[in-house]
Length: 520
Image (cartoon, rainbow, N blue to C red):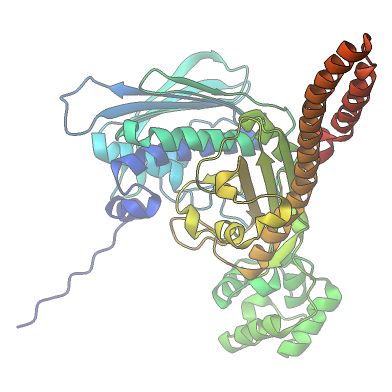
């Protein structure tokens, strides 16, 4: 006897409610860390969109106004000096999963419009309490909206809407939410995340008050922001058949030739004509009139044409060696630091830039393991470090060629930052970079470039230490010889002149070392 199959359709919010682990909320510890990370990244994005040096304030307190259960509740408040939102934008931005300003081909921290909203949704499903958003644009009233999310409909439910008195002198947003979590076990990851963020965003002021009463401050070291990334057109080699059909349906171009030049980067009139000739299609045909067979011919022509220029790297916004070094110096206070920005490269028709750095000595201490800080579009990657391509490259480099016996036993930290319109993450969790040959090559070249400067620094440092030891040794014996001769001859020989010459030589080595300035 067969049973009827019951089909059910669920909303995007309902899907992630049932599959929280896909968004990084698989347990209370990971969820506590993920909530902080997602809300901080939203705040950084908002400030950078306003072209303000970010000022982010995070306050987390334990919420005790309830019957205690198995896990504590927390109240988190995140404030930023970003672009601000109007009363109609707030529910749409925070009350629906998969609503984002990032559904374009552009370098960005996030992509799916999921993280910030999912953080608030997780708080709702674990506490059944609403969240509050207070925001204003410069010169406009301040709006405070309390709401929840209708999970089945993926719609915001506004519970209260207030206009606070006065006109705001600056734009800002404050998000307040409650959630069930485990801060004591998540504390280390959260502080590490903020510390690593302060390195890759050295132009941000970040403060964090935690539930234990600890106050962490990560001040900015510069007011200079990197340039904003630009939106890019698609590269012909990076388009699949489905995307091509969508572009053809949505275009306002009147001819196929203008369609190709308008919707694809680095495609001029001559290139468009050559592609259409391969496809056997007339240049003046309307895109909306193409048959299914003609669309497939156009797609095959785009894939087979081998004269396209590489993707345009000007749409990317790397941090830059100076800002990278500034953040590293501020947070780690090393004796040596060297950052390198590699030339733009391409994988799967997407441009990318790799930035690498090495810091050594100073306040850095050996930990018995490789110390590697990884970033993707300025997001710290804290999990699955040993699976990352950067870690694998560091393991296979012979560091003895650069004056390092074993990176695990030395005061050395490695940094790898990848910026791209499509970061090659290995898994849905987006915590480590896949071993893509083009990316691996750039990472290795960047690290070796930094390591060459480190080798020079260490060589000079060790030579200086050797001369100092020689000076101390000669000084001891010269004093003994001088005292013996003084007893025999009745006068003291000019030993001080010899010691002064040695001291001057050691001083010359100090001055000629160049130290941080030369290596940086």
